[in-house]
Amino acid sequence: MAITAKDVQNLREMTGVGMMDCKKALTEAEGNIDKAIEILREKGLAASAKKAGRIAAEGMAYAAVVDGMGVVVEVNAETDFVAKNEKFVDFVKGVAATVAANKPADLDALMACKYAGTDKTVTEQQQEMVLVIGENIKVRRFFFFAENTSVPYIHAGGKIGVLVNLKVEGGIDATEIGKDVAMQIAALNPRFWDKSQVTQDVLDEEKKIMLAQMDNDPKMASKPEQVKVKIVEGKLNKFYAENCLLQQDFVKDGEFTVEKYIASAAKALGGTVTFVSAVRFEKGEGIEKRVDDFAAEVASMIK
Image 1 (cartoon, rainbow, N blue to C red):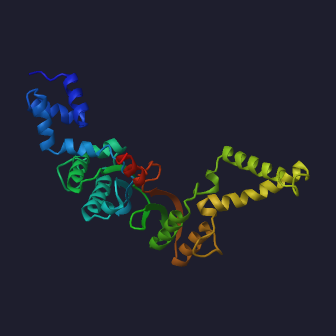
Image 2: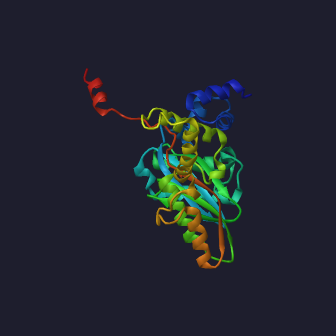
Image 3: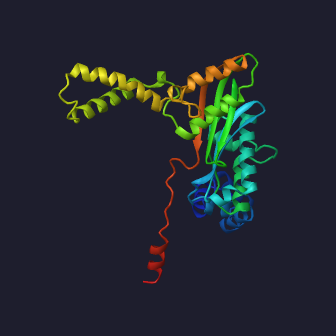
């Protein structure tokens, strides 16, 4: 029996399972849609699809160096409890290993890769984890550095994952330097790495806000415009110190900026270290979490 695109679409709408899996199930079932649903249920795909609609905003941000490559990933789950599950943590580490082995171009490419140590794709392994753990699980994002020296840092058991990339010269071990910088990034989440990255439109907006603040301050409003402009120029240094990593005060020692700390620490070790870039993932950031009003739910049930 010929399987049409409409048949595949109907099965997809009924089960929420991917198009290719629906097509395979229909082919195996010789076009019988009830049999196809049964096949999908037996494979666990239909069950995992039902869970896929649930909000997964917990989980783990994980950073590591795997075979010399720096990798940071975020994998989401529905509850913080599951995020501490050993099987879930192993799955996250496997995703990182898969990234390191394949260097995928994007998330779709990663999901199509063979999951590390298996003959299953990451998508298939993720579906299996949904069935084993009983929650919606989703690989959300990843990043990797293939060059230079990467130093990972995981904060609060996976709440935040940071990967710092450094250019290290002189044969020194820059792990501690990298970790200190990563901890700073985890704690303060700077908008920029260096003041050179601050665009003119951002500066113009800051200047506009500062001038407006002075106009609204009785002590400053009467000052000549050129004086206000000079004051604003001076205040921009404070903006850099608050928003740019390398210009921030080093949290562990306020006598240094982060940039000066890196240079000083590297010199003490007999080499040089240059900050290249970093990535900071915080689990669930940007995901709208569902807030359950239990009292309202109970009240609605007894009306």
